[in-house]
Image (cartoon, rainbow, N blue to C red):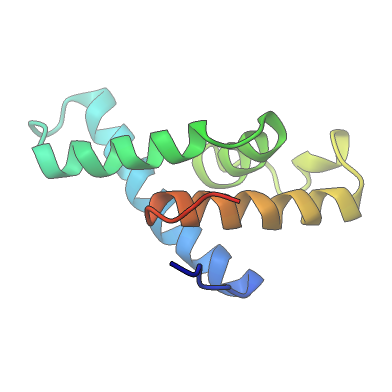
Length: 105
């Protein structure tokens, strides 16, 4: 099975979609707003499992950018600009492929 090669922009759009849902799921779960729906829980578990497959730096980037919605320039404390974008692309690629049940590279 060959993996689809997404552009950086496509990876960002896909991640934003998945993490927007995941953030709303966490908010509802934390405040017990609705009872848990099995399919919703499975989807959230898939996102969490995909994140767990990443390296520490990859997880830091995705969690800071898409879950915690940290300040725009938060990464400057940890990475050079080149490293940040290289690791972010790799993190997005690995996350999306893992989430879509493809081989993680």
